[in-house]
Image (cartoon, rainbow, N blue to C red; front, side, top):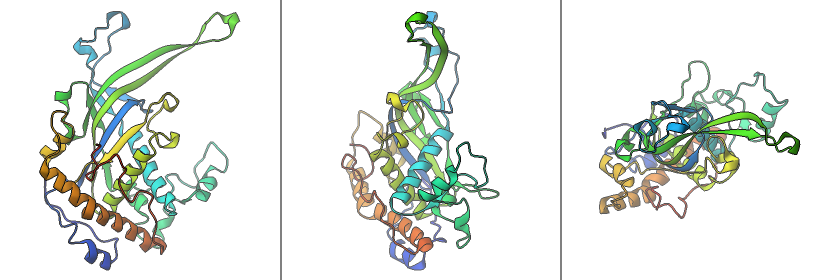
Length: 332
């Protein structure tokens, strides 16, 4: 349900607010909720999947048995880490250091790993708050330590193999769950194919739906960062570091991802995932508005937020949507 909201301009210079305030005078939107569209052929979440049904044994498996129409949730921890990595990579590609997610005095398994990260474009966790109370934008969005919670709420993604049971406005997706079980066998001829160990993995196939995020504090630069990061993750989806979950050597975790046009109404968000319907003229007009004015405004707010801390104007690597993405962010 759409609702009125107010932007928080506290971290931006006054001249930036005056420049883009009129552009962002939009109330009939889903903000502060942000819907991220997901299309993933195969996902193996490293933190597992929570299901709501027992599994039928191999001997009693029937495809149309309700016991095998398994619903559940995708852990938000896997998705959150992947999104944060996309946000960090987006800013670092523009020459901006970002807040390290770990403590400098932690007991790391690899020697000098923290120093290596600092050399690669991170700064010590919380060091960005010394001159600016709110810290860098990554610190504020994802939270730091102590009493500093993240300003972005990341929900689990509920899934169902039955399309009519999926509500994309609640952050749900169509997906098919299987628990892959196999024996890892010896390749030594003398062993005769003897099993070495048993391996199990939770996987989801043909994921299509939304991930619902909510800005606890709505700032233009937050939306700008999410837009830029999802575009970065989408354009680098086949690169190993930017895939989501595990089993990446087997093609899992290659995700098509985009921010659904925040100007859409509820019925229009549903229409994006309705295979029987196309975009309306009103949606096309909102896509044009998003492309020509609103999206550049939130991106400019992100640049201004970074410039206020670093004193330099960053060059973001994803200034325009990909060629296979239309103005509203919806996949063509």
